[in-house]
Length: 289
Ligand SMILES: [Zn+2]
Image 1 (cartoon, rainbow, N blue to C red):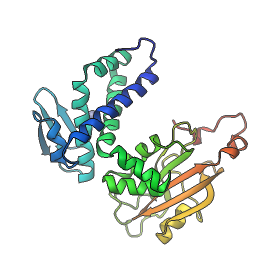
Image 2: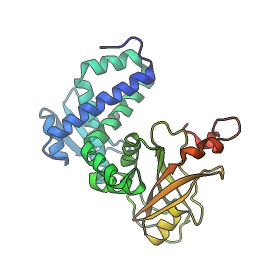
Image 3: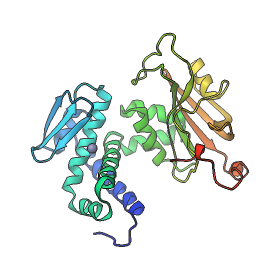
């Protein structure tokens, strides 16, 4: 049922919760999380792999076909499959669909549906019990991010957003890598390429007002840089290296993964007030767009 008073942001949050439930239930009923097993819940839908140019995939509900771009790397194909399955799950949920059509329209509706299907894809690929296990064993850390990505066989960015959503502590997570010197799948840096270590993707726990923009450089001597250099897991009382140059105190956990570093910055809440810039609001450089 539509709550006539639900504002669009509240509606989106509700829809994400519903999408997560649908996706988790779907994945739980599947015999496994490989492509073939994931299709078990949609027996009338055919799965086709084909070159699709710039598109990752598509779901054609009229002809009951999910198409996946066969020319992208397997990890991405797997995410796309889970995304397209989420489209199918959404289309089967009349209540959710009509709520969305009541709350959003046009391009915004399309955008919201794509966001929801990414939420669904993460919920299909990252089992809730694995997420809980990683947080319990490693805490809200860069190590938990690295382990989750590896064990769920999802990209670091997929693991990043889902881990952040499930974190209650004031933590900013980041995937850091050597700029323009690493292939997308974490392969070795190009010989002779530039070697600046920067933030590739970042996401913060709900309620954390700060975030690290992609491209933010990691200063020399920071634990994240030391983790990359030494290939050792680093933990230290250090700081968040904001692009503005401001250093906000944080407990840093930097976990090297091939040519990248999975990092967490746990903010020190007792210092947040004094670190808030004059005027009481963080500068544009440090907030989510
Ligand atoms: Zn889509």
